Length: 312
Image (cartoon, rainbow, N blue to C red; front, side, top):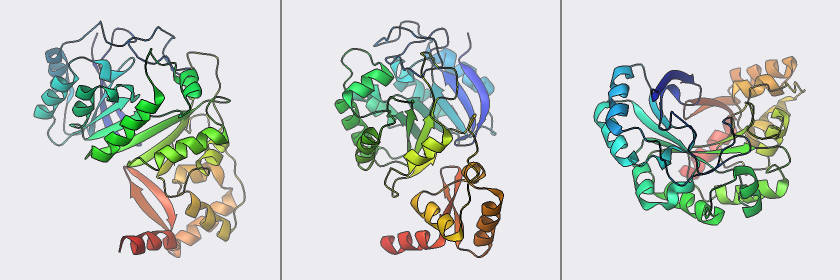
């Protein structure tokens, strides 16, 4: 079974060529409630392993100048791959200007070799669904001896050392990790993490267990619970129901001051009259565009001015 898939056009990461480090079966140290793969027993290491040469040879035949990023992933947890360090070194020799990215659940950052291997990558996306031990165990169903407090400590440490682009992903499940108290705990931890962007999502594919997504409106309301200094981005729009509410000029500016939004967010939140007013504010330079890791956010001009003054 081949390890290479794609390329896939990702709005967040560009043209992505994927490497599946567990193509034959699910091998993961989590058994998340929301996983799109079938439920399975957790493992601490891979038993079904593809050798590095096979992966590199396949990658060479698919890699071209139109690929923006090589994404390391798996049917499960990619950092359980035992030759990850050697694989990253091998990719670095052939990737040219293409960037490397891994999607990981963060748990193996406690392994020093894995920690140091991830430091070699251009981009890393870490999952962090909960801070409370009971909620963490309920939503992510981790392998024995994976402790959330240690996981959080390692994520913070990694963010302080990593020289590339770091992304954090939080996936909300209805009635599990979406309470105000858990969001506050997440907010407190996120304020200690240096990252490029924090993606808030929810279930958008059939889950392994009988759990439900929260709505786009609920995701947006949760986003407002986080400090407005955090680089929050609402990532889930699949099956999103439009809210289409009225916003005055002042409400538009205040809303974007609290939480910068993309045009896709605007399409779901604003009614047609509000969208027209937004475009007038853009034309008057009261609202400007700010780029952040392949995404364009709408931000009040005075918000940008304040940040520049702080930097100065």
